[in-house]
Image 1 (cartoon, helix red, strand yellow):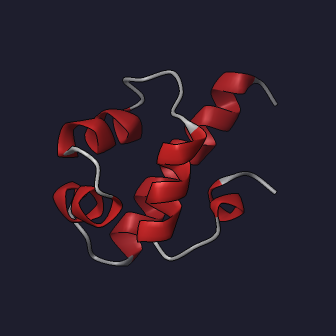
Image 2 (cartoon, helix red, strand yellow):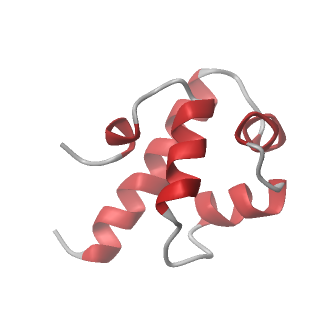
Length: 72
């Protein structure tokens, strides 16, 4: 797996879990204490990476362990 493929998986997994909860991007941003534009850019792939802190905040908001956002 290339880095780009892994990063795409993470972005898609975040979106999948968000939509499964029926949340908007704004709702996820609020729960994760992040700016809506940042979450939107993550899901759209407009950033090349995120910090571990951001990954953990998003995972916590989605009520999953951070590893749940990574390919197994």
